[in-house]
Length: 414
Image (cartoon, rainbow, N blue to C red; front, side, top):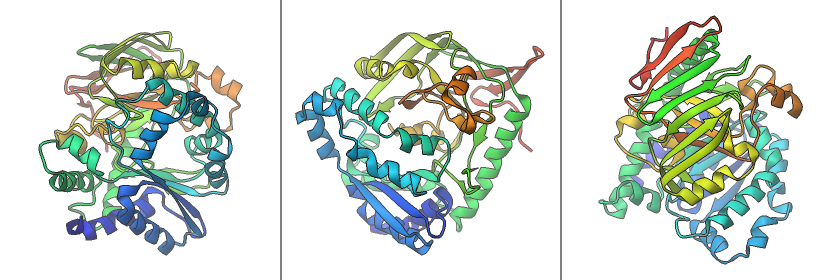
C-alpha cells in the first residue's frame, strides 16, 4: 500500500477532522482490524495532533472471531460477563469519540453455526446498551471509515491477485470517500454535506404522512410519525459538535412509525449480517411487523435477525439514496453495508434513532413507544433501491408529491 501513502494520510486527517471532528482534550476509541495497523497508526497520530488526551485501540482479528464461534460453548456466548463491555460503556460516558475502521470478510462466518452468532450478538446488544444509546442519541461523536483487508478485497475482486485486489479496493475507497481528486478532502466534504442538508431540509418542509414505494418485487407503504426529522450528512452532538457518522454517506434518513408499515419489499443487494450473507430476500409487513419472509440465500441468518427480539421485526430507519451515487456508479457490490447502503435506498430493521423525531432524546421509553418509535437491540440496514424505484410522498391534506422517479430525486435542491 506504499503507493497510497500520501492519500492514506489525507484519509486519516479526514477521519479525525471531518469524521469524528475530535476536540482538544477528548479521548478516542479506535476499533480496527489488525490488517489496518499502518493506517490505524496514522489515524492515532492525527488524533494526538488534534489534541486527543488518549487513543485507546481495540484490535479485531477475523480468525479469532471464527475460533470463538467454532469452539466456545453456546452457554458462554449467551452469558457474556459484563466486564467485557464495561470499557466501551465507560468511555462514551467520559465523552470519548468512537471511530470504527471496517474491513470485515463478508464470508467470515458462512460455515459457523448461526445460532451461536445470534446468541453472542444478542448478549452483546444488551451488554452494550449504554454505548449504543450514546451513539444513537448523538451524545458524542462517532464515525465509520473503511480499509481494504485481503479477504474483503478478494471478495469484491475475485479475479485479481491479492495485491491487485487490495489496490483496486483502496482506489475505490479513496475515490468514494472523496479523498482522490480533491486537494482538500475536508473542504470537499463540507460541500457534499451542504447538498445533503438541502435534501433533508426539503423533506422536512414537506412533512409527509406516508411514503409509497413501487418497484419490481416492492409495493410498500410507510407511515411517518408526527414530528419526524430527516437528517443527512454531518450533524451535531448534544454539545453542538458537528461530525459525520459515515464516510462515505449519500443518504438522507428518518424513522418510520413502528406500526405503520404495510406491504412487501424486496432486497436489491446482498446483505452481510455478522459475516453471513443474506441474498435475494423479501419481507412482508402488516401493521409494522414482518409477517412473512424468504431468502434465496441466508434464510437461517435472516430468521436469526428477525427473532433477535420483538423490535427486530419492525423498521427503525427509512433512507433515501439516489441510484446514481458514487458507490452505485462503481458498478461493484461491496458486500459491506457502509458502502452498499450508499448505493441504494435502504431500510433498517430494529432500533430507530431518537434524534429522528422532535424531542426524541428527551423522551422516556414510554413516550417513544407512544410516538411510534421502534426499539430493539438490533439496527440492520438492507438495500431496496434500484433504477426503477418510484417513491411518492403523501401529505396530510391528501396531496401526493413525487419524491423519487426511476431511482433518482424527482426535484432539484437549491
